[in-house]
Length: 131
Image (cartoon, rainbow, N blue to C red):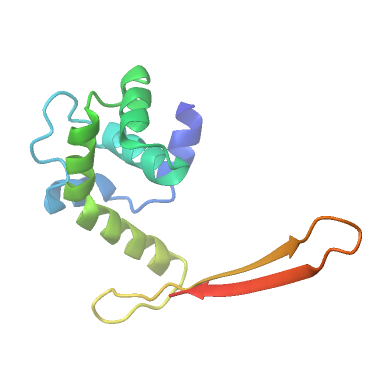
């Protein structure tokens, strides 16, 4: 698991821990002041879609962070700017052009096929976009 984490961390900017300090993401972190533990905890919440309570439990069992679900929510709010700056750095490292203020617009497209039951059921294609 640590190898996977080190691989993931290699994609982030080299100064990701300093960015965490500068943006206040670690401010007030009491029991476990590890930026890596906090980042792992936030990523399992954001990436896996676990509830705050489930994420807090998994982070506690993995010994990454000892947070309640409410503390995790507050920590997530404090980490907004940190995560935003890391996303911008990731986009820039991949050659994605951003505006002068680091803003970018994301569009999500999906195409889904829905088939009515039975032999003669109609086939529907649904396309939608979220901006």
